[in-house]
Length: 124
Image (cartoon, rainbow, N blue to C red; front, top):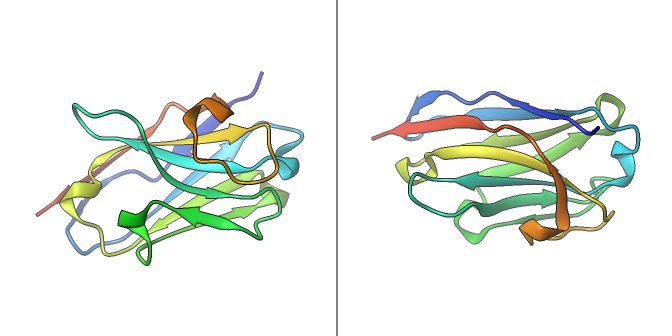
């Protein structure tokens, strides 16, 4: 059974930074593209960023480009989301997810395993 565990969520002031981590109990982690999604109160879960299995390709939601960076360490079965210049509209529960593909996908339906989420709150 695949387990994904996110950590790093916190309360931070606007303009601040956070780094989220997601550790995957997945033997084939290095063959799977990974993604980060978020769900704000009263809204649907939305794509944030994705990274290919070897880390060579990344893709971001337009609103986080230039502020967020996704990366991974396949030796540690971990994917990261570095979030800088945080804004109140970034407030959400952030989820990491694993897809069966090695290349990037932004569709939630392509992800078969999800973590429980970590809460990020950005105060103005």
